[in-house]
Length: 500
Ligand SMILES: Nc1ncnc2c1ncn2[C@@H]1O[C@H](COP(=O)(O)OP(=O)(O)OP(=O)(O)O)[C@@H](O)[C@H]1O
Ligand SMILES: [Mg+2]
Image 1 (cartoon, rainbow, N blue to C red):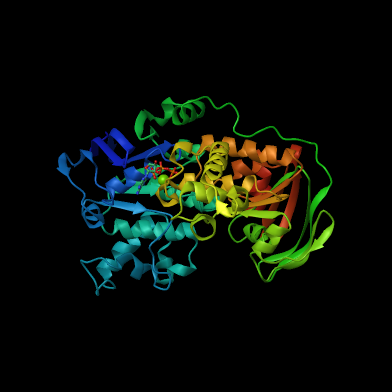
Image 2: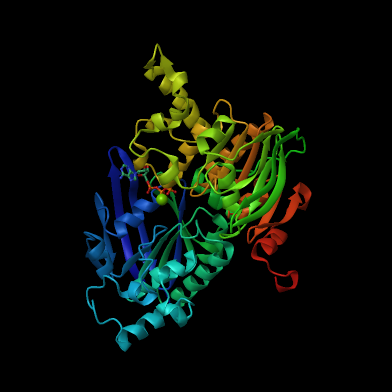
């Protein structure tokens, strides 16, 4: 039987004139996994921030066990049994798993090695499917998924009952996602509730009992997962029909644009060779540690230790800094928005035209009229709200920040080759479809695209050719008609056919 635990009662939250959430009501039962989905900026993370006490609602209230509670801050949220597992994990890498689990827990600062606390830590780890033997290992040596599980274990030891996960799988490989999903199932069986946010629709169907669909801050629908299909879920999310997510592939390629001969990165990538034709999209698939993202970063000029012969339109070029690669017509869109992507304190307009200020200057001065027009064109082309161009980038939702990175790279003046790492991480499905179309049109002009993604649907859907990598080496090449999920997964996880 479902036991109501939390009841969110008609809450609203406004930022300036924008409603991030509007009159939302939602009940959360024990032993339930609830998916929260919606476009970028729909209000998902704001909901999480209200539950963790980072924001206060403007209207409405939240009930816990039938009592109204105001969550004034993260400490209060913790007392109520609410825990957030985010991508930016808060673990200390040099400390052991055990120390991390009890770190900062005010009840028992120094005596955590006592058997009672050791046992409780082991119990939590085992509940999540982690082996107790990791208990003394420094957290820095664990995989990303294991670190996430340690963070959950830490919250379980603080008696968490509601676990919030905001895009937890965005940085995980497929094997790690499996580990996380097993842990979620165990948590559920143990009576915990999970609020699960993801842009990967397939994931919602495999892990959630229920989904709540948000659009522009409003709750559009709340339904059992087995009473809705993928198509209607997407339609409700984006408010329109979406026939095809991926554009049609083409077989018309031009001459060789990029040739990579003997690319090496000591200890990480060995002897990588391939070539990319004009008009072609090549996807490199590989898990963390496979070298796939390092190949991408090396070709973008970001790995000083990389070596090899790289030709652009037959001209041998030196692998050098990102600026120099840009001059050769190679542009790079990074997965790390905060570090390499956008200027958070600048507004959307300035971020969008940053790489082409010369075109919006008149007589040596910035011409704001030109800048506004140009920025509006870019914004529309990547599905950004062009009425909010003066907002600072830092106030945008994660996915909308990624769209800025696209907007300003896709139409740069002399770009021949676009290199991308995790191009649509955190981007909603409607905007993805728009971006994929823009990428295909970019290639139709005779340019080329090389990208890496851990999202296998994106790899198979977008690429004209897929290159699989495992432990620093290329395993296989798949041309359009050979591309299939099963073989690619087999290559990148190095599993024998019979075992799958
Ligand atoms: N601190 C803030 N100041 C101003 N506006 C904000 C702030 N935080 C969020 N917003 C706005 O509130 C709305 C909801 O943002 P939120 O981050 O909740 O979206 P989201 O559904 O998590 O999107 P994404 O899928 O991109 O992560 C957006 O319009 C966003 O720009
Ligand atoms: Mg968000």
